[in-house]
Image (cartoon, rainbow, N blue to C red; front, side, top):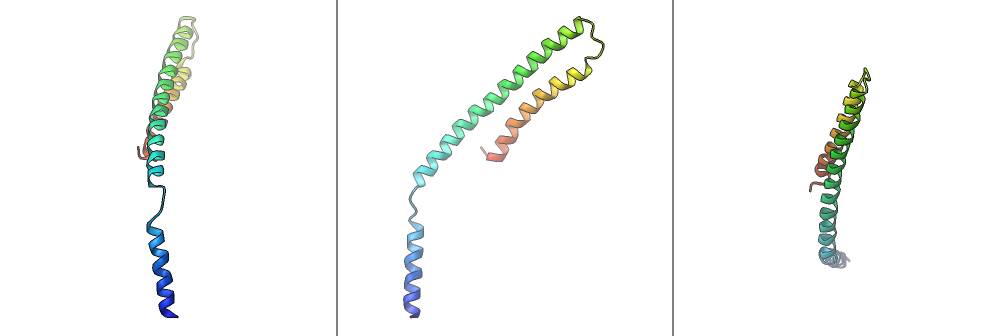
Length: 96
């Protein structure tokens, strides 16, 4: 009985080492890397767009004589800064 149990354990362990799907996992990792870097580029482009649109709107309000533009400057700056940090955070989380 004891030898039968040892034999069964040996069969189970030999089957566990021969897992299929190594190439599929490598392909999935490669797809994740390529999609992630395009998402990182998209985050940086959105940050640049936020910065440009914010600068134009703040300049327009400043020229029109609006007395309080400090809040708008901070809002547009931190929106752009958040998008840049979101890309860096995703890069750190996924380890890519």
